[in-house]
Image 1 (cartoon, rainbow, N blue to C red):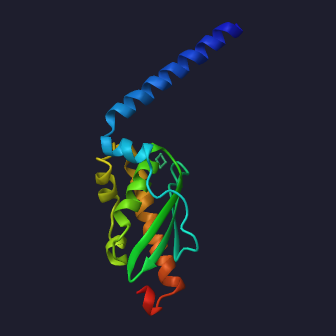
Image 2 (image 1 turned 45 degrees about the horizontal axis):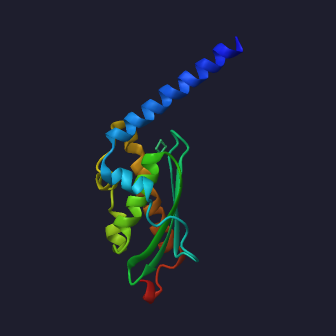
Image 3 (image 1 turned 135 degrees about the horizontal axis):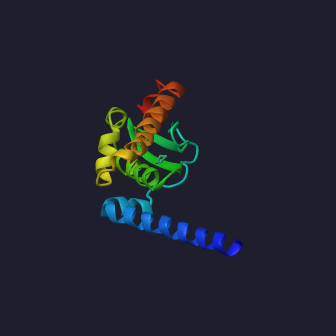
Length: 153
Ligand code: FES
C-alpha cells in the first residue's frame, strides 16, 4: 500500500515537471532572460519612494524602491514573491522605468510591461499588473513625502 502511494507521488511529480517544461517552451526568450537573470533585484538604499503591488488572486507581491533625481527615476530595485511571470515582469518593469520621467513612469501600463517580456498567456496577464501598480505607488509615495524639493523635481 505504501509502495503504491509512493509510486503515485512520483508519477504526480513527473507530470508536474513535464507541465512546467511545456510552460517554459511556450515563453519567449525575453521572458526567460528576465526570469533567469533578473535585473535590479534588491532595495535602493534610503529610497525616495517605496511602492507595493499585490494580487489578491494569488497573494503574490512586488516591492519597488526608487531614487528620483531631476524628475527622473535614477535608480529602481525590486523584491518580489511570485510566479515566474511576476519575477520576469518585475525585472522588466525596472529596466523600462529606469531613466523615465515620473510622468512617463506613471503612464507605464501592464500591457507595455507584458510586451517587454514577449507577451504573457491570458491567465498570467495579472502578473504584469504588479509592476504597474507598484511603480505608481512608489511615485505617489515620493510625491507625498517631498512634493516641492527643487533638486528632486
Ligand atoms: S500567479 Fe501570482 S503574480 Fe503570477
